[in-house]
Length: 153
Image (cartoon, rainbow, N blue to C red; front, side, top):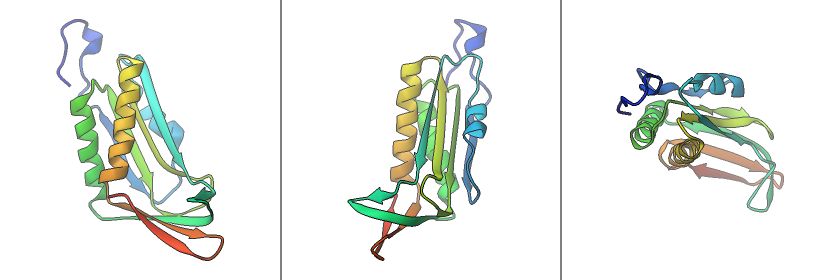
């Protein structure tokens, strides 16, 4: 983001990408929210993806996420595109891998911008592009014993 000369408080931070991670441990909403705190931001949008108990009309018993070794670098590339396209003050994205249960947090992303509309749009772009471009795969096991792999890209 290019600095503005309108108000010193609107100067861009060194790097608006504050947190990018793939983790095999439970995710923290507080950690992601703190990472995007910025005094010049008037809006912060946060998206939380959780494991639901169904998919495509079938009951889900469990699921696991796995990823390609390049996944974290790809997350950073997606984040850089969002930063280039919106007036992002701060951005964070964390995705879980491993076995998860119903209700567990699978992904948490957040973006802070000068205004709420920008924050909503940037956060939506971040999660949508992350889901479509980052090599993370979901393996679902259904209550009838069937299973399914779902690819992110």
